[in-house]
Length: 446
Image 1 (tube, rainbow, N blue to C red):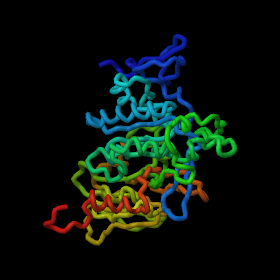
Image 2 (image 1 turned 30 degrees about the horizontal axis):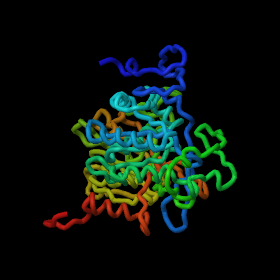
Image 3 (image 1 turned 180 degrees about the vertical axis):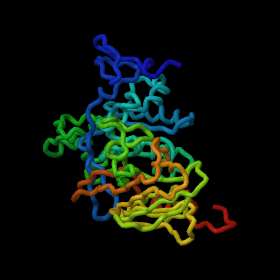
C-alpha cells in the first residue's frame, strides 16, 4: 500500500509542490472524493457558556453557526463506519456551510465514499491544526473514543464542545444514542440562535470570537437562517457539563521537566513542553516488573506516605468510574470539584483511597527503594513512551475552569441530553443503575 501522503489528491489552482507542512493552493471549484488540507478552513469559533440559577449545567452560546466539525470514530467496527458516513452525509446536506474534519487514517478510509471533500492533516501536524480550526467535536463509539478525542486537545486550554453518541461496549460517558443524531446535532448547531433562526437580525450586529484572538464581523446568518423550522431561542441553549481535567507533568530526579523538543507538537504517548491535560486518570504501575512499586506520596507539598503497591492512580471525578473504581476508589459525581488518589493492590490493608479538593497538588516520587528498573506511566489508557526511574516525579495540578461570572475556559464541555424538568444528576444516576448495575442484589436479574 502506498504511503498516506502520496495517496491524498490535491486541489490546485496552479501547480503546487507537495510539502511536509501540507500548505498548497486550492481552487474554488468543488471537487469530490478528495482530502483537503485543514488549513483551508476558516479559523475556529470560540463559544461562551452561560450559567443558570436553576440548573448546575451550563448553556452553550455560539456567536455564529459552527462551521468546522471534527468527527472521531471507534476503529475496526464496520457498523460505526457506516454510521459515520450516514452522519456526515446528513450534516453536510442539511447544513451546507459545514466542513468535516477527520483523522488521516479515517479520511483515507472513507473519503472515496463521500460526494464532497473532507479535511485532515498529517499526524504530526494534526493536534496543533485542530486547536486552531475545530468548532465542535463529535464522537461515535464508547468511552475510549471520547478519551481519544479529548487527548487530541491534551495541550489545548480551550477544548471545543463534544457531542458523543454511544456506540461502544459500555458508553457510560456517551449521552446520546446514534438514532437521535439528527435531533442532537440540530440542538447543538442552533444553540444560541435567536427566534426564527436570525439572531443577528434581532439585535445589534455582533462579532465572532476567533481562536487567534481576533474578531470577525458577523454578516448575514446564512447558516442559521438556512435551517428550516424553529430555533431553540437565545435562552434555551444546549446544556453543557464541564468535565474538569488534571494537568500532568513528569520531572527528572534533579527537578527538570521531561518534555519533547521546544515548540514540537506532542504525539500520542508523549508529553508536551508544558505537560498534558488528563480527562480520566494518571496511572503509575509496575508493568512487567515482578516487584511491588515503592512510591513516595506528597499532598499539598507535604509528605503523606510511602506507598508499596502495584501502582497508584490519580483520577478526576470523570475517571472515578474507570480504573479507580475497579481498584476500590469512590464514585464521585463529575460536578464535584475533587481529585482521587487510589492505590492499586496496596501491601498495607490500612492504605485506603482518598478524595481530595481539586485544588490540591499531588506529587508521586519513585523511591530509591524501588527494586524494579522503572514504572510505566499511562495517561487516559495510553502508555507514555517515557517511564519513571528512581527519583523521578509525576506532578499533578488542577485545571482552573471558572474565571468569573459566565467566563469559562478549560475542562471538556460535554453536550448533555435535555430532559423536561430534569436535573444535572439525572443522567448520571441513570448511568449508575442502567450501565454499572449499582448495588444490584445477588440472585436478581439486572
